[in-house]
Image (cartoon, rainbow, N blue to C red; front, side, top):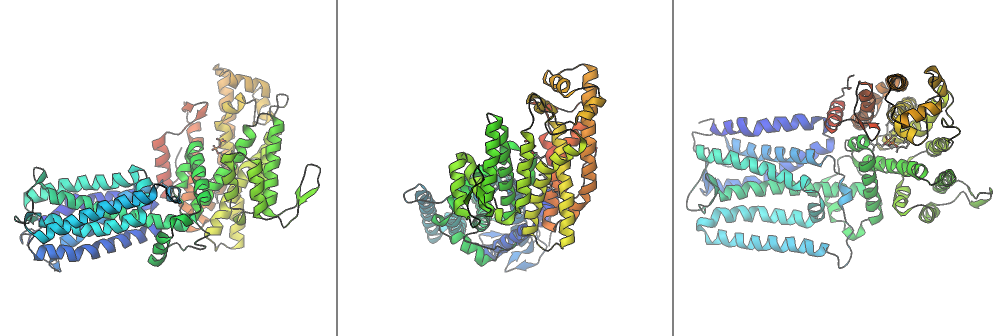
Length: 608
Ligand SMILES: CC(C)=CCC/C(C)=C/CC/C(C)=C/CC/C(C)=C/[C@@H]1[C@@H](COP(=O)(O)OP(=O)(O)O)[C@]1(C)CC/C=C(\C)CC/C=C(\C)CCC=C(C)C
């Protein structure tokens, strides 16, 4: 009896497991626990017969003075634990690296004669040839037996997983696949070198090639660790492939439970790729691109949501952004007004309201269906906006907040050179504006949350809506405080004139001072006072509504906290003297965003 093998775990495998667990714990969902258990079960069950055979046939052995004693089918318990901990560590690293990834955007609808048939086939042929070689090594016996046994055991599983998930295996970024294979493999090569040198496990001569990758690391061991990590990552990619299909295509899988059965996962993997809805994939891809490009805060927050809720929120963001840009980037106010009218007409089609022309004549009756909405979108919106409009989940969203959002955009159209404060004359006008452009967005987000996680009482739902609405206003105040200079350069001032008057400024002098980047002490002090007042309003709305986040359905609570806190971090940065400005905007450094998000997941609010 000895403790050498146990010490290998205590020194090398348990510490990274602890570290990875701490990092991933706040991100871990029920589905993650399910897949960790699923993978570990398969890893243990598939390795035991093979490992037991190797020990019984004397290909490798464990001196009795290095193991504690108990065995399972002749395998020391420390070794069984190795299968568990290696699968656990590689899985957690994979999960961390894949958290920002939305897997459905990597699915491809295959067409006759495209490259995919060949890609799949090449992988299968290479795998089959290697397998044939492995069988020959085992049959011939001698020095290549152990190498043959490793390959003959791993390749059938790899071939199967490749055949099921080759699209994602090829398409996912290397950081999602190559990295979680390479890092643990390299690490285990080092650990193995040390263990072989110390004699913790021994590979018998006669059945090994004797080749080494570096002094002390047998080539068979190197290949073994590489292949086992490939098996784990291929298994995880296949799991994600199945989940991606289930979540991306409601037309094929109407309802999907939080923990889909193994049967359903297999059904999803076996859905022929020619049955995929490529418009839906492209629409989701465009929405993700838009979110990634336009909002670092919401992009980060989106990765903490999961399943169909995550997809719907991203599409909702994309819709809001498309609508906002259609108006902000219009060549003239008249064009922008036309843009708002088109969006309204599109919503009329979606919600089956009477659609009227400019003269008020009804042109489509109430029973207007999705078909007319599609036709309208295709004929009236730029190519890159159409799919976002078509994918907007109107069946899960009430129409009122969407129409109200358009009213908010209309308010933006009343800012002119003559009226640089537009419709904002008093504090309540600014509150109304915030309610329309951001309170509405919060209502829409909460509706989606309550759709996917039902069960809230009517009173609770109303309370959540009202608090969410205020939180939206808090974010909008932050947005205005951040963008004072950017808005001024567009000739807009969202600050109520009485606030300016108090600082002995007029809308014109405020805008021209900001535009000219005036640095005089008296002016910058006035701007700071006005900004501080906007931020006070932001925090007052924030403080009155933040507790309601804890009343949201469990799975949405932490992600919503991340969304709100990442954005409010901008406000916290703005409150610091000497905050950093990039392109006229205060920014939060990348590391701090991640830190704030991680703390928020644990339920902590950022300070200061
Ligand atoms: C996680 C995820 C993907 C969430 C999606 C959130 C979403 C749909 C955001 C839409 C944003 C948008 C483009 C709206 C158009 C109108 C607008 C410009 C509103 C301002 C957003 C600023 O975004 P950004 O800084 O990127 O825009 P500009 O560069 O300035 O153009 C707003 C500040 C509004 C954002 C408001 C919300 C997301 C609502 C927040 C409140 C909740 C989520 C509810 C919290 C729940 C409780 C119970 C308190």
